[in-house]
Length: 289
Image 1: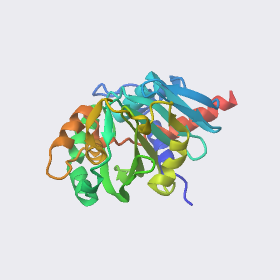
Image 2: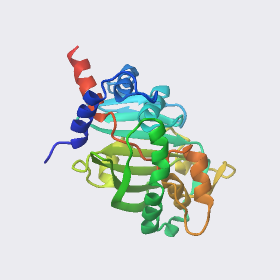
Image 3: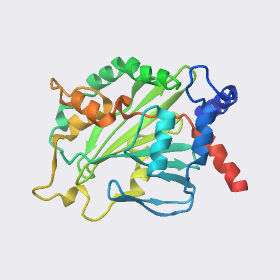
């Protein structure tokens, strides 16, 4: 199996971007990497609380973790927009993949509209908005990317209250995968986004299962803990999936409105590989010290 191309591409890009200052004033990759290295990375296995969502991550061996403001800052550094709801980032030292845990305190989301999801229509809409997302990335001095194909079409697991999907993305120099899970909770939901190379991707569920297994809501905050009178989101999982992808569900405009509210301009919740190779190199240096 070929090695992950994104790590090699990043290593090359960091050498090329060694200049301290860009002419347009945007941060260089080297500056982003230096700030990323200075964040409070956790490498000790243990149980770590996520206060925003009333949940926790049990971190195994060979993983690294950012929580709270450090996770939010890393997301902003490498994806170009403020990300205050990114409450955890997990990096796998075994295969150099990364996952983002983003919580939205939306209220209780219904699960009765998934039949309205049209995967082919969604993909066409996503591709139509590529340039809008790239305009923000140009301003931040970040690489541009374009949407590929479904590698796993959207589906909803009613037993675990989790929706999944995965597609590939490409830039001028690389291709990589984004696999997404929407996990419903009593008071909102998490987006868990896995990022890695095409050769590391198995299925959306296969790539995300280990990440979902290490995360759980505290007692009283699980989806099944809902009681009459709890705050309701006012939409279902189908409309939510559409909103996260930045598209419309059927003929309604609800999802498009939600996208503007929930994502603060971040294009359908995707993230780039960006600093994966840099994190791996930094962690190796840290272990040697």
